[in-house]
Length: 217
Image (tube, rainbow, N blue to C red):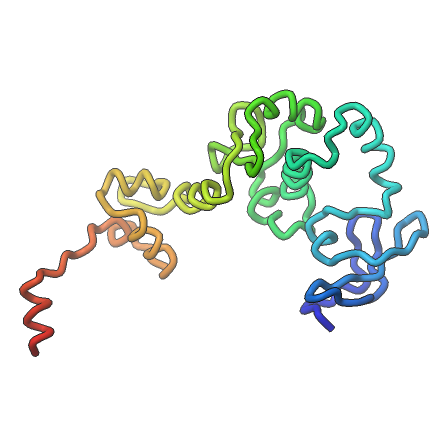
């Protein structure tokens, strides 16, 4: 049918999922009924990410003032603002466990997109999305910047904490302190290394003489 998980009967915001409706390419759509009685086919990803919470009746009162005030409802930065809230506040969002479930929140000031844009708008550039400077900090002025997708991916990898003999450290910090290349640390994390001493042990250098002898048999 084009979907792996049956979400019939589940609720997402004001939506109640009635049944599977259709697949458009590889994208599953579900027939949903809003609390106001409206029925509509909704893309599963929009439900799970919190991008669709109702037929529009829920958002209408909240969005009308914002749209008429800032006129940026179609701007990429507005989408970043919406996703930021979804990650932290919507338990059905695929990334909630990395954000809201860890206690990461959006500051009260940024409940308003106008305030968010006032703080972050001057440094926004096309192709960038919101990123936290301190990985365990909240979304708030002073802890956020705009970054490319590659910068965000690198920051997520190198800002995660690993156990070392000196205590928990970020990957990049451990690399500098112990002289272990970052790619080596990433590989050890990927292979499930947990021993603090082994994690930061400098990689062995295989001598060329040994390699030559082994190759010659």
